[in-house]
Length: 115
Length: 114
Image (cartoon, rainbow over all chains, first blue to last red; front, top):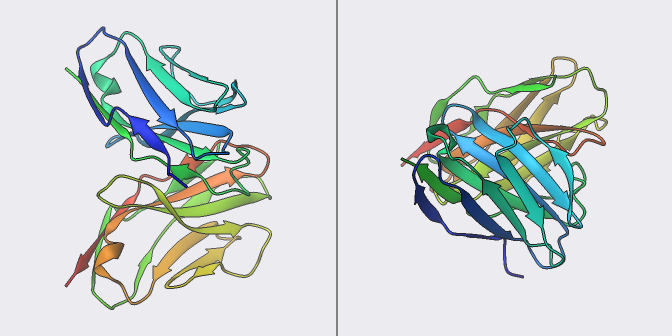
């Protein structure tokens, strides 16, 4: 099976712009989670989608949003970019999203640089 | 709120030696799960080992084993016969049973010395 793929791998934006990141889960996986990784804050949970519905959300402002399509692919959008949004954004997929019992498979990440 | 603390930002170990990475956590829950993830330079997170809190037996996966001390809220990872490919950032993580929000520690960067 192909692994989790994320596009683009690298992105440079300027403050105030918006950005959309894409994540394609492993075939058959219905849950997609998004994480932000920065040197200062570490790895933080953004949100999780299952069957096109957001089931869980971390403590991020409303500028961070996402959606999931019927084929389980997910997009994450950040509007009005700030310098502090520069980070590695990881997505992970699992079968049902029961993360305690299932294994999450992570993608390679999208590195976003905001200038 | 639950927290996960990794007190060692960086560690080094000689190839073929054994190293232990520390992790402590804080929770008032009784049913939870703990994980160690590895993030090599490729940046892709890989699950190394999982421990269910209700299990007293320490989890083991080949050269990787944990020392789970529930009362002390400690969950350390032992890597035996360290290999160059073990060089990576290691994250300790926690999930409360029934809650799919995973909480990560800040990570420990492990260097393997040839």
